[in-house]
Length: 270
Image (cartoon, one colour):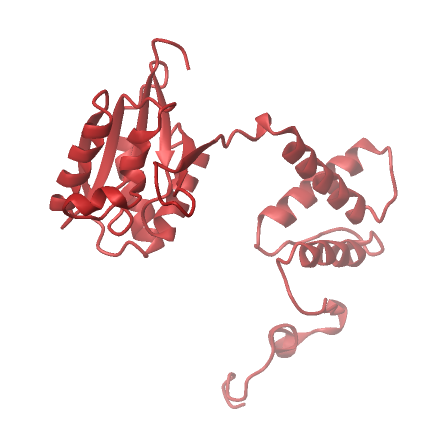
């Protein structure tokens, strides 16, 4: 971080982990307050997301954070979460906050604290950082050891996979294995065919939508369909056996029932 850059932490107030009253609250580990106690982690501003009904706790935590880290400015933001375990609601509320927040990545470095909040909140915050709605690295804090003394530890996680060569190589290897599998291990030099297989592999793995292969009789549609199915099964995206149906033998009113099953009474007069 450059000397002119300010470090900003965004995090949810933990209704359980950050709780505590009276002098005894200093004896327990509180992740939000512990961030300010880290000697090698200077935080210029803490954006504290507070749910309704947490006003009293927010005041205590904000005051304690400033006590241990006078350099830190604490800003509180009230968010309206009716159910912190509802994925759709949590993601929508946090995304709305992120879209309305005036991020300034040229002058500020952002850390997204993911230790507090429900597991759903933590997942949503991860997704928002991954999608760059929040241009931040992740900040994970952990309590101290058995002594329960001290601020514990922290770890900063960068989601930019280009920084992790081993992970990038793993993705590349899985991609190459998928292409080789679809081509039945045949290393063809036909550029058009290779491009086609690469597109099929990309769509087959990324989507659960049905795939339609067209082409003349004998082109290998059924064989390719089986390879695609086996590849998706390897990646645990489908279950059960591959079912091959000769559509040339399926005619008339019985076509739909032959392909998708027949339930007594489904047709008029059946």
